[in-house]
Image (tube, rainbow, N blue to C red; front, side, top):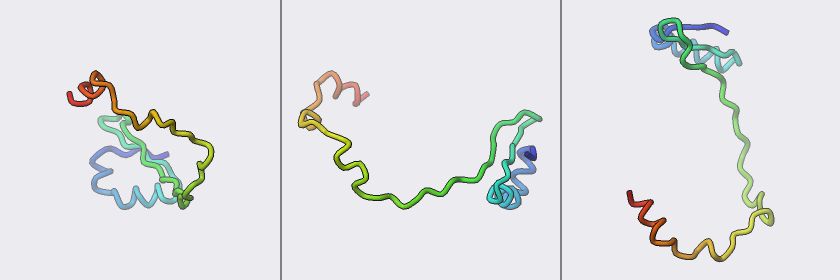
Length: 76
């Protein structure tokens, strides 16, 4: 796992992204201290509508107005 400093990361970002895309983790350091890790993102599959149908139940009380104390907490 290569370690590069912030300046190198800024000037060589395209190359570092290519490394991450190839599956290699890259650590970015400031003053020799690791501060971030560049990794490949996992692609998510296509969402399927209705996959949780029948598993989640929302009670009618969900639509009741909130108590005044909770409403005021959201306003601050």
